[in-house]
Image (spheres, rainbow, N blue to C red):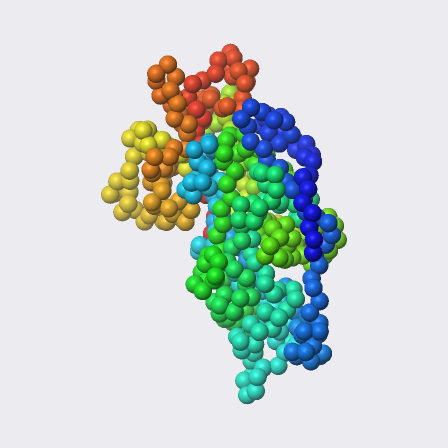
Length: 429
């Protein structure tokens, strides 16, 4: 179908002016907006003739009626609040990173197996349908053929609207495809396995060794060019936007996703949403909260997009302070042998390593901190009167936030030390 991209006018979303983004421009502040390409509902090309030629009319009708079959989900979602121009293009400094590492991934829903077993006959002399039969019918099913799982920040008021930090929605930047087509035979070989005779019929799979695209259900989004852009997207995620795992209808159109209903605006779809609220780090005081950015995830609720119901409340208690390399001796020393020997500490490091690669970050769960490796810093490295500008790692004290004017500080005095940044890791296990 032909899709028209046009820029959608922002609605006011709460205290937008405080962030200096979204509606009005602010010197050097970024912009968080969304583009809508909604001209009409999903248009699935009819395959009745092709299916009838392959299977005959009776079986073709059954293949056409196969329900949407995929059940996919993340088990780890992380937010990194670091934001400055030096981070552009640096893969270590994501804004949102989500993946299936331990308990989730991709599987076939129980409803698929129930429908298949009730409507199709096994190849004689077998008494049950084979994996090859499941794969063949799944690949020919109009509701499932060529479905590609993707991650994006979508509007809960209309899931066809994707938030973008640029003038248009871009596949690979704003909409992240994860794994290649789920009905690619090489991908189906991994997960089309009926592991039980009763519900649940299948297990989650998170690694697809023969996928032509990504081999894992993992994706990253970045909106960290500056503090204004980062604050704008936090405001979006606190209000109309939600991180969504859906399924593309077309590999060339980043907006169109698969949904049972074509009623517009599209408010339900196949997949899951992850609704976040942002808050201040623990230890914030009433005085510091007036200037300190609310740059950690406080709550994360998993939502079934087909019913809009909340299905799971995640654990977002892991919040790591990002420490400059120059400050590590005081605020984030290396792990000691005694700490590494502790099973609890090792487990926390293992969880952190799902999103923080050892080549990019040092992690100390005992101190609740991380230090980036290499020459790139989370903070603008500046000097004032010949002295390096520091970072205030104490959330109970006021600190310099470039989005807050002098009137926002006690006595109108702007602190020289920058506010600390944080990495939040939320888990489903």
